[in-house]
Image (cartoon, rainbow, N blue to C red; front, top):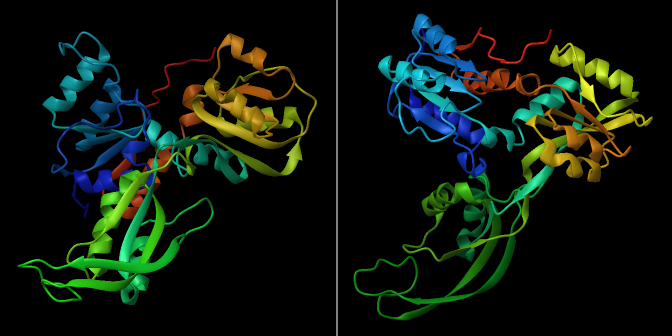
Length: 368
């Protein structure tokens, strides 16, 4: 029997891997139609939401479509059915179909679009190509010495303390905290009305900004104080495990011709556009699913001999200058495995939930 789920549970499974705060400012990821409390009978996964995809969902009896590209990207001033976007919105609402998109938040996830592309191409030891700044915070918790271990454990279990390939990271300083419990308080130590001094530990750790409330909630469950003293600071450090693009290594370096052949086979694309061959052997490759021209210089700085992306402009090719092989392999083609990724994420969490990858090929580009 198929499991019915609340929409918010499905969303949470996706956003645990690809939190919405990771999306770019111009993007419109998230729930586009529907309500988080809706009960979902089944979900269809697609790269793009088109009219045939919505018809397919109706035929299957599914009331959720999970897409990579947001159907509503630019503001809609009218919804009269004069174009496909408007018609899809109307048809989805009329048939009570929720629409959800995981776009640039999935692009910027370390387990997202580019990780999938690297895996399919056979790249290992992958690293974010352009880490993002502004998403990290320093969290400071003051706790009596007797409970410092419990608080640290709660912090780390909630996701705090990750720096690159290390976890459970913190800095601890011993000191003395003072306070006076006022009328009505129930202090863990000290007496109401008297100033008390308590040996305490200042625990400093690092967190992604979007999990701050979750981490503080975990701390409150184990912290003995009635009122917890804590500080939170924005950091300019780059989050090394989130950002645009990715690069990785081949176990066995290959010739440029071999790389082109592999890309065509893996992506199932008949034609490849690329810059002039450099004559270098390919051991490190940078990738960016979709439009990645903004990462060309990052790819060169990474030491990659090739950069594979979905779309490049004519003048982008001049930037190669013999330093790197630029490969344009198609927007749809470099993002096609996103459907498989979203399927795996939801299915692993809810194995009996009705879930299917759309059979509709939504690529608007034809090769003749």
